Length: 303
Image (cartoon, rainbow, N blue to C red; front, top):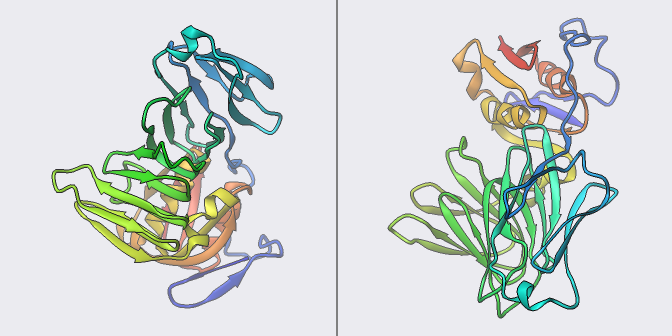
């Protein structure tokens, strides 16, 4: 694995880097990576802390069994025979919410699989009914939508709506990001602005819709957009402020810059998401253009 600053200096950290005298010693202040943790809020308002729940069935509603698997997935399974009450029940929403330092996978009753990144939430009915499968996303998630031509799958977020019949795509809709990004890996999606313009674009695989007040479509590296799902931080000429927003969410830390000009310094590279936070900080320090200090759950960016 390597990382390099925009001056083009490549640096590798396959071997331990602690022998380099210019690297900060984080031994006493290091922090662990995030893990599978989330809170499930049922339609009746009851909350289940998923990392504390035992594997097996954790709830039942509207003819749906909700189970937690041994590897930390949340699975919704429709029972074979619905009662009249279940069949006619309203599709009140469940919400799964990951904190900073958390991620989770949820398998919806239609067979759709969703990977939820840190500091994100997904609201959805326990059982899809009617003419659409509609969910609400805050934050970031990767969707593998089960095909159903008679019931389109709709993802609502703050700036946009996405409509698909069955496909694979990633949505980054964090409120602290300037834009919302939808990246298509397979199939096609229709992206529509929620503002009065109603602008709409159709994406093909390898394209990304970047949404602010309008939709801009560009070709991107899918591997980079989906790296978080594979347990990797991947940076491609990305500024330090953007990189550290990702670090902040995944390691549950605050970020403080001592000099504003450091925010725009750009880096390229690939780093595991499952190492301790010192791994990524020391790797960035190898460029000798930035240094860090950890105080509690705060990372201070130094010249």
